[in-house]
Length: 245
Image (cartoon, rainbow, N blue to C red):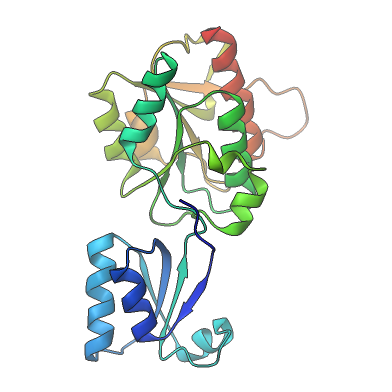
């Protein structure tokens, strides 16, 4: 099901959005406000795992499109998120070992959209993103994906590290991208696999990297030592395709 990305302003409007099941990506609340409706919003956000940012009134005034935010502004997702079962169902339907791409704090919507597009073209069965400190399925992401968002399941999880542990129990093994790793051509990237790509600035977090089975480095011939996150995802994803074929 597709949703139109929207800015939701006002306490009652946000409460109703939560109760109707509308997927909310981000929530900004007036710092220090503790009245009844605000407590209800906080409860609904906690129930659905939506991150809350407490900000000053002038920040909300700048964000507001209506001028009547009542101390609360939410951003809804442009598209509905999938469930983990959808990824495994797609792999089973194709008769293939699962291939997923996990993103550790990708904040640029153009990068996320490009990675979803790459995932689709590389035959990955889904993309997994964290709830916090990462971009969600915004309209910009949808546009950058060039339509791939309609065909590639995107799952939002609370913790990437714990998700890796859970998927290992289902038989997947994991490789993350890092310049300090083994050259990717020397690794066996066949079978049920999860490819972990780090954020634009710091790469894959140390605790997440420690949970991976392999660390893969992309050979570099130029004068700089890093690639854009979406480009790195593409290079490694298609090395996986090459080996799987």
